[in-house]
Image 1 (tube, helix red, strand yellow):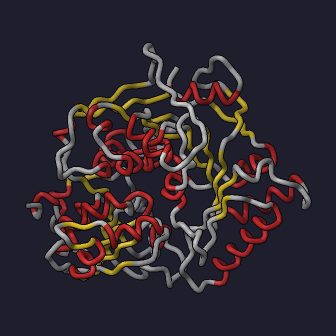
Image 2: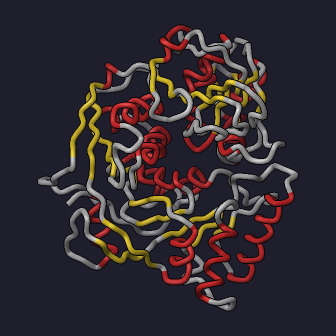
Image 3: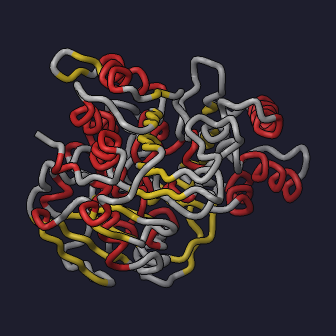
Length: 430
């Protein structure tokens, strides 16, 4: 069996499962946030009763992150609904806004807080919950109704997905990031090329990546239609997780004779910086082919592109230079935000590099990745053309339906900020 199949078999009490099997699985962690949490809570109360109790108040993580720094009354109402439910149910893992526990983007916060444990099952009411597969667990996004069912029972009915394996041979060039890799793969197989399958990443190119870059790979598998992304745990994984949790976990590996739905092999040194053009993550072109596209804004942030690794990459390009267009920097979590002050390049903090280059730094959250209310930091409110490290570029995704969003790596976005046009980072890297 594959890692995905083994995890699902273990959690269903079966010795063996195969792709296509429909099984009940026991859930280790359920995550929800301010956008989908209120709806999930409403369904839970409707179906289980107003006085019903959740199945386990220690296995639910509620992480408000989307519409946080806004005056919008509806966004504030959603937070109040979460607070009331948490108090009523005694939920242990609530990372409330305007408190010391506030974290920021749920997908990065889950990893920072030790919820991404190998061998487990994590469901979340957000499609990019698949990010956690970078740690060798089964993690996927679900709807409010499924989440409400888990709240009441701790179980869910799941179909076992087949696994597509993507192997990167050799180390990636220094001008290539995980974002380039996943965009290239999505461009190759299409936005429906992995529908209800596991996308597993392996090979030298993956093993050499740090944890945050692995998270970026798994984050965007849903843009190819995948059920989940997965990377086999190694020492980097174990060291990261054990530093953040004392809970026992089991590292699960593929069987030697595993059969995959398909195997895709890439030569790492053949990757080039790529960009997804409007209005699809699969509408891929080489960055160097888009040098005549003028920009109004450059955006570096989100669960996909707002981690410390992403900011270090951007800072290497922006250090000692000035941006030509509005450039927005949004750390994914409060922990990443703190590192903007402590991480340095040649004695200068990341924060100072960005500020001195003319970039604007916002508070940690999803910010403009999902558009949000009009006062959302970095939101596109008109006909702006933006290049962004986020994960989707559908019409209106970052705000205005009249805007256009191009998706790229932090290196490409930072390079573009210096020229005001889409720019291959190789043109500005020393």
